[in-house]
Length: 304
Image (cartoon, rainbow, N blue to C red; front, side, top):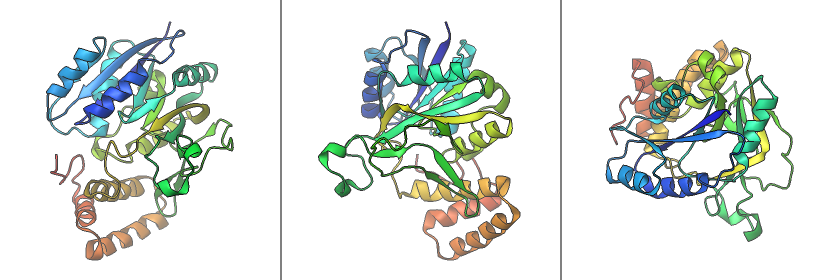
């Protein structure tokens, strides 16, 4: 029987992590073994103790300092692979899962050996929608956060297909995606063997897109399977519109553009970065400077 290693990060988010674990504990897994790894790098080490006390079977990996999304997940991935995982599930701690979603993703991968990674349909958790006043009560829990990703190569932006739409069955067919979502994705071991792990230079944001592009270049299919679904609280990992987003999204977008985009787009990004240096927000300016200075990883971000 094959084994899936689930990787969940806990960084000062014990309430969300415990809610996530409560839903993960109900996952049906009669066709595969399940090993759960929590990478804890919280300031308060009592959070790790609380997790272990409530969930004895969890493999708790204690770390210190703000590792970032990429490095923290890589620590968990390496541990799971060392212990024989055939698949890795990356799962945000601010998610709630349907009890059958993982079986559906696993079965799809087993039936489609060219699929290197697959993400489910991801809804906003109730009350966590971007535009709460748009929806009726009956729509809550059915508002789409992600049903595939599209890269705008002319402007170097990633967008979520279907975001903010109420699910009326319009996205029920499995399909290819430009990038899988690091919020929740099942990855085949053989794919990781070829691509390597997440790029720790990026620290957080764009690391799932970078990994996806490497996988696609190697010939792997990346898919969305809408019959499998979960819910995402969305603001649990980092605050929308925050200094943190200004810094890492700005810097990493430049890095991705200079690595993957066309010459025309690269020139446009250079011009835009000069404008941001002159008139951008504080942490956008710092992000631009750090990119050109080669300060990757955590860079100048000190709010840890």
